[in-house]
Image (cartoon, rainbow, N blue to C red; front, side, top):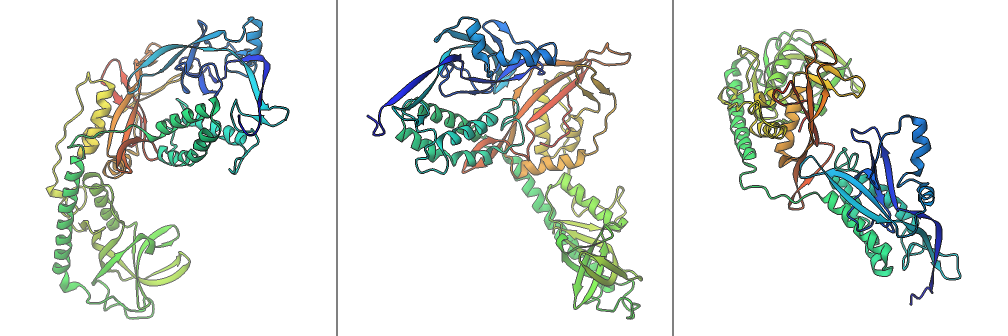
Length: 552
């Protein structure tokens, strides 16, 4: 016998399902979302899961009430609501009677949805306590509701917080895998409760402890992601990229050295130390000066404009960051990011020509007067060497740019499935093929709306280049691979007959799995950095194109 004494069970009058269901009547298919299954629910072990969508109860479909007043009047008495016991009482139900639900859940990994039917028993609500005391227990053999057992909060408070967190993590529409909540950070938080769950199982064995262990494991498995075995050549694209970065870096170093040597005759041998206003500037005006690497933290800001700044022996030299010459440097750097590697250290060495007029800056918490230079050449991050005087069409090239070649594979066939289109997008990012990547995104936009959908026959995506660079950055750093996990059903968002000139627009929702390396294992994960949900559309039965304006 438990040393704390005998236990006593109390039976309440009302029947309950032990389910917590959230009404989601505005979804494409109105349903009751399974938010939680109580540890003592008659649906425990039935196969019903948190996140399932209940579309029928005892054969009666879940329908959206005609108006708000009807919803407010009828919803409280539905399955999984606070007044459901009154419904069972009116129906003459008794303990042990079965309630059958039909649900839909995603078929994942895979395509579309699958339906299942599950049954659970209606049970009287029960409470337990230590006999002849007011010390209530959580279930037979369970801990005292207000007990702590050496932990920092009472068992009942801890239980309520865990249920609150877990139902949100497992939510099939807004959970950890379908919002920007990071699964790895959530997993670390979740593992922090393992000690208390283990203590519960060891010291308070019973149905409550068993259920809590099952729920804890379910959440852990969800947050841990799927274990993925990558093929041997899965990271070849990274190897090719690293080789290209190395080759361009060597060419940049050689080109920079050659530029300095070629201009040595007109380059000052030392940093120009001259009073910019009172001193004689004629000796240095028009000369070149080789300025060492400066990081962005060393820039000065005046009137909202940035200046590269160098200081030696109290003398200053400035280079405005927004001049036409510097814009050419940054344009070349951006091409490097798109074609070679997305990450470039923003430290800049400049070969600059000293201008006749000095500059006075009063910003960044200081006042400084110095000479101003116009860049003749620059070396960015040690890998992007730009000769500003290069007359190449489209602006000066970075050293080695002419050696780059890119094979464009083009979009898949017009009859390719949405899954194939999204897979082609991922492949284009791996290959660095921006032209193909661009062509996979729609140049129109249809915005679904049950009352009045909106159609834009021409659509411009202004952030395309930056999202391309972010996609490349992810696949070359945090993300090892990405693959389509799930594809939904085709739905029509615009019929085409609503108004003259409209086209028929169909849409499909897809989800991507992103794979990363965690503690030596390759697993799927979600975070604020990646985009899991994608949509594709097509017009009049034409090729599918991506309408999600986002990076990988």
